[in-house]
Amino acid sequence: MGYDKLQGTLDLLVLKVLARGPEHGYGITLRVKQLSEDALRVEEGSLYPALHRMEQAGWIRPDWKASENNRRAKYYHLTPKGKKRLAQEQEDWTRVVEGVAKVLRFA
Image 1 (cartoon, helix red, strand yellow):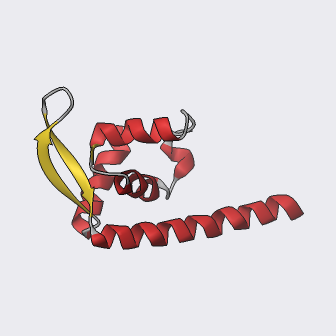
Image 2 (spheres, helix red, strand yellow):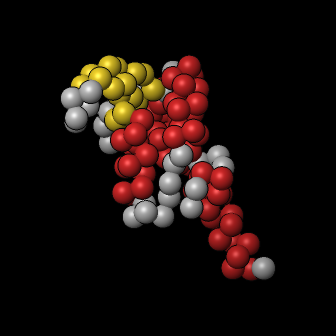
């Protein structure tokens, strides 16, 4: 399932991955794919504008360092403000999932 099916959940996915520790952009895409057991895919064309937006909002902060293959990469860290946003995103997502489940159960 690509991001088009996950409209509005990209922030949640990225923040949740970064809650596990700092990661570079490509690493975020791999981690989402891995953790979802290949059910979800984050396209880089959607990811990088979202990372920039989240950085501007103060939810994440970048730090340049060497990647696994010894290339310079921008690693993103979750900020305290980002942790608060993650909690809100999770709460909102839970509410949506519960609402959809109710409709599916009773419709």
